[in-house]
Amino acid sequence: MNRQVDVARQRFNANRLWAIVGAMVCLLSVVIGAFAAHSLKTTLSDYQIGIVGTGAQYQMYHGLAILISSLLFLALQTPTKLIHFVNSAFAAGCLLFPISLYCLALTEVKMFAYFTPLGGLFFIIGWCLLIWAIVKSPKQT
Image (cartoon, rainbow, N blue to C red; front, side):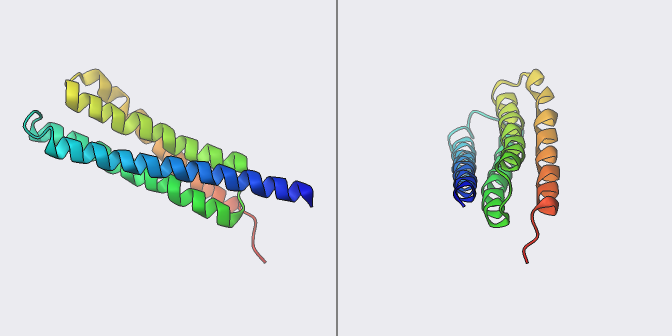
């Protein structure tokens, strides 16, 4: 019984941590998007603002994915290791995809664009792992 309590506590704490990370990713996407739209609109071209907007949009989507998957995993009693794999993939995508777009928009250095597809790949991996985790979750009777 004690082992089950420890596993449940670990699962809860992992989900809590990832829910906080997801909420912070969402918060940053709003701050960055608003900053670009209001404070940088005289500095950046419409094209550059669009690039920042795309980065903020995908950052928000995947911050929500981290947040929602954490709550879903809690309900499904998903193993902690799997929770970390799924949300780590989403988090890596949240680092590479939007940040590369923000850097591209701000500096116009084309090299940053090479990191964007890698971030997208991490998003895809995260979604595939999420589907797999849901399929493999214990059946409720």
